[in-house]
Image 1 (cartoon, rainbow, N blue to C red):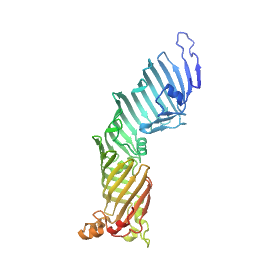
Image 2: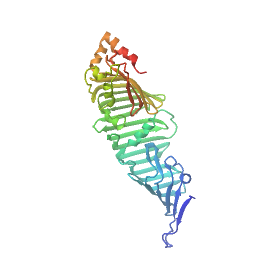
Image 3: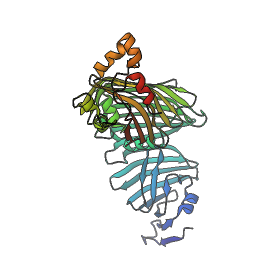
Image 4: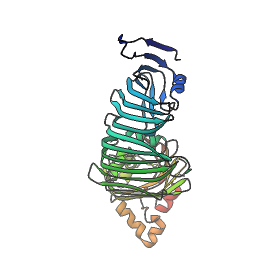
Length: 436
């Protein structure tokens, strides 16, 4: 019996009316686990409970969850201790095997859930929630059904806030489709009018078809429309090949909180599983970078013995406040939580760059090196000349005039340093001075 409880006697003295028995108790984690096992991953802390017996099979339950921490781990939602929340429902049990929770309501400040649940032998068999609002923007319905070997989940409604899920995936360094195929299967279908992301971006007409077997993702197909009216299509074929295309790469990057200085761009991303690794390429065409501080630092930072910047070297202020590029490309490798790039290049008429290194490691750090070139269209002419280009231009994507740089530190705010010996060095010599 819980440490704190109170029992009240009949609320109706009429002997023809069955007497109610009300039990009030405060349950700690150990007591809760004895009464309702399997909730330790989602519930932590004391629960103030009030149980009212309605008849031989039914009880009304009211819970005060203000001092309880709640977590829904698979979607990244949490409620901390000290945040007010209440739950109430009616529970009916059939010989201890079949249990139903009807009229379930969870309510709190800016969140709430309503629906019904059925359990068998302590495991969920069906759940139907007519209203789900775990974030202020949420407004959707959810149904869960246990089938042979797994669960079938369906989501529909007007709005789903994806930001908690995106944050969770980034914290966990994403997920891999490789792994054991053992365990239960899950299928998820969703049709939502609007999905909210970061940086005031949203996707409309979102359709999702996802299935997994154990830890192995079998299918993950998504189609949607960005706020600018461009399509986004992501597909996984055979469980080992991912492709993502969109007519607005900048909107996709802002939605996922990856990068917020890009506008427009035709995106084409392809990844293929090789064992536990992912390899592939990223190709973006016709995009624009606005107000990128690191570009401004590259052209204005004094380097060399006489303290020249790239601006002074070319005797003009290189305008990088709104830089347009015809293409950006990089080969990608994702291994053990680290995303690396190789043979990276961005090409524009005014500026360009080559780059390589670790874009983001398992600890959220960056370690990238590269070469930045102003007047890229003119510089590439040296690379195209058969003899001079081979000697001085250092290949098709490296111009005559440039500066080598390094980006290292936290992914969200890496430190930029430039090599003071690299300014105005011909390509073949500049390679010697590049950061290793």
